[in-house]
Image (cartoon, rainbow, N blue to C red; front, side, top):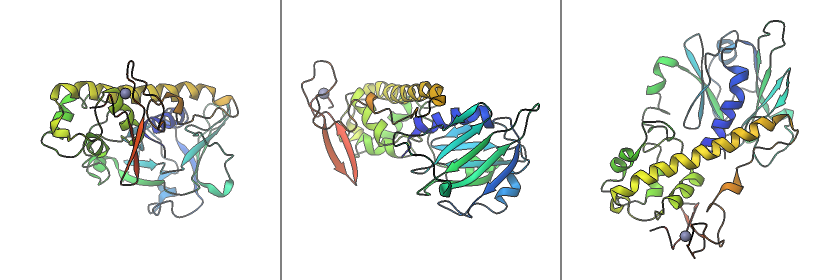
Length: 292
Ligand SMILES: [Zn+2]
């Protein structure tokens, strides 16, 4: 499943093609993805100009000049392919790269021609259809159920040690559970929570209320660092899109603990080995020696 850095990579790949551009033609090849497409989906998009391409947590947001925002979520297997005059690109085409099958091409956006240059075709593929798209009035977006209770963006200024002090105070649950709660911080998934807790040397299972306040600044910084580094890796592989199989991957080689059970802990001087525990169907990777 794409996590926040992968979605941000997709956003950066699509932005030059879609931001500020009018949609000349939109096709929906089926009435639904995970949910039904909204009423008048094609008509409301055709001829509209996309003002910007934003991201909130793992949602891509394309505010339109008509007052709606196109909200897109990639689910498990959603991805975009761009066919543009300069060549083809698949922003956020993850490690298991497969040639897109036309039967999974569910939504097609064609942009207007500019100065005699052909427009681009952006196709949304989603074999498992856990992704979804909706049109929401831009001035009501913050109150939409998806966003109303969502915490701050982890890469934004509103997220810092104070966010964690407030969220952890008096709580018996571990920091991992609280960080995965979208009300604490938006868009953090299992992989990057495991990575950040390891960097901050904090046990995923320690009751969050018992973690000393002075450790929460470094934890907030570790969360920002693991995400920013992954976005950077995604961004650098974005440049290689012209290379036919420049897969973006899940940046696995960068992980210190995720999916590394039994391997030596990468903390300098630590003799521990990475352990894995399964809770509620999710694996937690951590070092039992240096994460306390
Ligand atoms: Zn260790």
